[in-house]
Amino acid sequence: MDLTVRVPGSCGELLQGMKAGNPFLVTCPVGSYTTVRISDALSGIHGLGRKSLMALEKTLTSLGKEELPWGLSLESSLPRGKGMASSSADIAATVAAVALAFDYRTYPEEIMRLAASIEPTDGIFYPQVVCINHMNGDWLASYQGLPAFRISIFDTGGVVDTLRYHEQVKDDGGKNRSAEALALFEKGWQAQDEALIAEAAVMSALNNQPLLYKAGLEELLAFAREQGALGINIAHSGTVIGVLWPEHFPDASLQLATRAIRHRFPNLVLMMQTRLQSGGVQVAEGKREEFVELFR
Image (cartoon, rainbow, N blue to C red):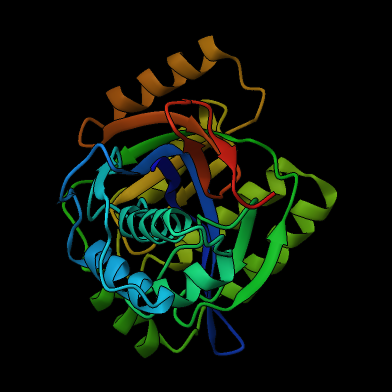
């Protein structure tokens, strides 16, 4: 037995809010991962936090197993408490790896149901970019073929209590433009219009300011647009901001523009340069380092 599973994190969400009284989020998967390895060459359980340990226990119970007869290790390049779906990636990678170790091929809906029983969950383990109800685990829509925006991820500092944030959202009652932002996003997706998609993300980010204020967000948006950005997105329940650049924005221009932003906003920490990509669960078996998509 030797298999490795990885699940991407996110740059916050492209959109998040309420529609017809129900919560939703649109995922923003990026190329930074949680990786879980299960092997008879390992011993013990390493790297799991409280939530991923709960996921391990719930998965074993659902499979009718009392314990994991192999070693397991979890590693992640995703920072905690920033809104980059670190817990969701940890949970999903753990569930998928344990299920596969027992020769059970799990599905995104099963992972989501289990994950949502632990905490509000990002759907980065679904293929493509998706819209989900992150509170109860319902899948709402899938958006294939979105432009692979270049994204500069900046951190505003600190950490956020996700559960406390979601209590605020309940109190807010959805009295904002979330549904309008989602409609604009879907119009942009159908038209393959980068500018409309980015504008929907901006609308969602600004909608969130009364719930979790990010100082200087409007100034950053205006300055980034001067440098060629299409807009911004945020971690609605976290601390990161993504600057959205066109899919084909040149490397040299990206470097110059990012340098200008760092100079203009020295309080922001550049975490990574990445792209919007498809979500999903990737698996490599044995000593092979080539990952394949589980949900194909």
